[in-house]
Length: 187
Image (tube, rainbow, N blue to C red; front, side, top):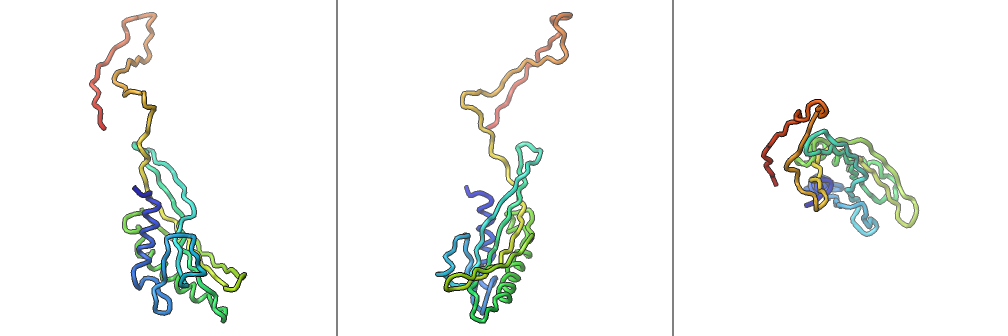
């Protein structure tokens, strides 16, 4: 079974990959499910989708439930043209990505909520080709149950117990009371 984090990332890639969702110069922009794209060998502009980090806080429930906040990046990578004008392209593609994800804040029921928290724009000006990138950082909230607790293999289920509360046996040795209860085991 895939992790929920992986499911969310794959679903974002699927949403952005729908033909006509993210377009530049009348062509679909390729969407990659990875931060490691050999962008010097692929059609540009392109979009990389990957995760940065995730925090988790548990809810006081049984079984334990975790409320997670995932930071997911949709990074637009483009070659800087000879004219040097790259910002309009990055902004136009970023706006298309925002529209797709703003329209589907629960990522096709994979998340409780999602929202844009930051956008960074930078460039790399070394080498033969010049590249620029715009990274849209999204916070995606979702919940997961903790896996079932695993105990040592030689521990049997507790069937009986003798619990005495506030009993002073020195005054009345027969003061303790035994409670018999049937224990029902569920898988």
